[in-house]
Length: 245
Image (cartoon, rainbow, N blue to C red; front, side, top):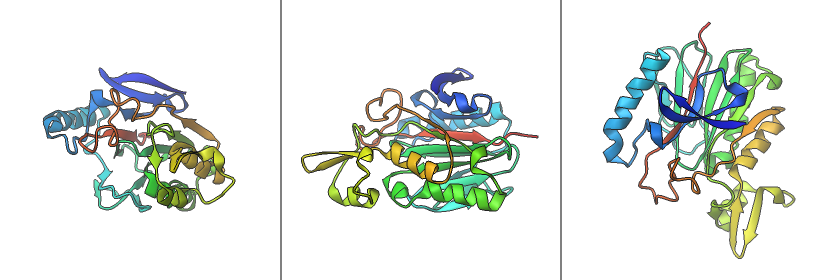
């Protein structure tokens, strides 16, 4: 179950499945990436310093996200990854961060293996099965069992607001029987990206999943929404620190 909490006074969103770990989703109260909001650059820079200090990390590991299915395993001493939409780490004390403003944020973590990942799954990444592919890499490269992975599907645009056309629909929905993932109204399709990503996790044998009900577009007073704010917005973030020892 998801619940609001505070990171040293900053409002965040956590899951009861990983409540004892340093992993959460930020809100407007804790902006880390200003994007097109130039007025938030100073606040975001200060918050990044604050985050590193409080989590005792030398730097933040992040990426230039491009809505792809590109996945990278984090290397010691490297903090930026170009053209990546999923980062995986088993380095103790490493701090991962990726940014979102309607796309689906997913945190994957195996406490047993002390290995985790953050995945950025917009509609293009979802269509390319980036989440399923990330799980496959985790299992292959680190010998992790599906039963040991906990998945948190964070706040994202809901089916209520993700209105799209037939072209996008056909890329996302491959099975005519998959009606549970969408609703059609006139010539528009309303698609549940969170449920589609949940299905990818289930296909890889992951059952320990928490899905956030919050729609970023409906709740743009709490989260940033690219669609609601017509692109002129900052980003909320998914944050994961790999536990030390």
